[in-house]
Amino acid sequence: MQGKLHEMDATSLLQLIELGQRSGELFLETEQKNRFWIVSFEQGRCVYAAETEGGFKRLKDYLQRFNLGHLVEGQHVSMEPSADQTFPEHAFLIQLVDQRNLNEAQAKQIIQAMVEEVFFDIIGLNQGSFIFDDKTPVSTALLPMEVGSILKRVSARMTEWQKLKPRVLSPEQRPFISSQELLQQKLPQAAYDQLVRWINGTHSLRSIARFLCRDVVTVTKAIMPYVEQGILGIHDLEVSPRLMPSNTTGNRVVVCIDDSIVIQKSVENFLGGRGYQVHTIANPVKAIADLYKLMPDLILMDIAMPKMDGYELCAMIRKSGAFHKTPVVMLTGKDGFIDRVRARMAGATEYLTKPFGEQDLLAIVDKYVGSAEDSTVSSPSSSVTLS
Image: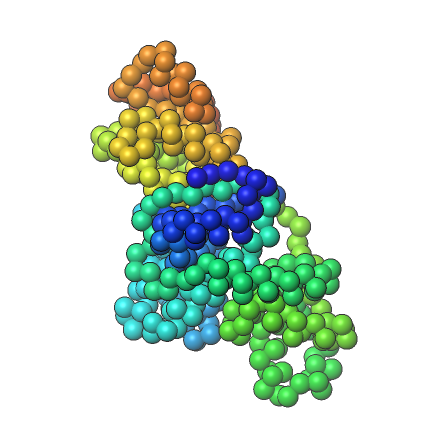
């Protein structure tokens, strides 16, 4: 199931998945701000949700309420998401429960807050694209939630949020103290100390809400009287394009989707030694989730794969604005006219016949993304290393 959000808004889509008792992952994107969300379902119930950028920053904020934020910093290296995890921060949360750093009730509280935060962001979407991928939902689902109940709570908050406009436009705006003297006169010492700790111009309204164990609407409404009196201020929202995570090496990112270990190793050997950042995916069904995390500069895709062939997968990702212009090179053992036509119709950019040599692959990769040596100037779609 896939389509445009102006044809079916996000709220209707969520309700449809619940009514159909569907299991899988819903991907939503809005081209306006270049944002992406993933919501996981099990038999129509929501088990997890995240924005594809900043998952561990969000988790760290929530862990602060239990004075456990240091665990995220201490485990930063081992927490880097891997290509086989759609929700690495969820896996880390389960790990904290298993290690008894966090109890199950606390983990459920965090998961519910995270899911409601994502619903708050997506229920107002009426522009963008969506794809629903039937696949196994996140493992060890701690808190399956009724979609209707979440929507009811979040919709009520959204109604209250709309009343705050135009004084406040986004949960990402950052409040600051204009007059500490006046604020101290207005508040008990304990409340003042807590407010000074978090409202310092560097934390967003949403982050402060996470720290205080409240939703962003409640927190924003609570501080608005002080804003109106000039005791607090709110920074204007910075107007700049929201970028996907940039890879730290600056190298071009190439993803190879092929169930053949031989082809995977060939691509890694041919390109990895030339400075390209190479990621291989064997399972085409889970490729969509991985592509959203990796945001490659070029995709190499086998045609003959189990469960979903390359034509179908290529056509599916071309529906997403995120990959609408990403070069896709189809790999096949056939070299017939009909195969080439089908590849073009599915949205493929180029066609490469197997077996291919190192120079054949380098020529086609250089053609569409430039040589690895040129990548000191980072591509807009460059990505963080996830493997």
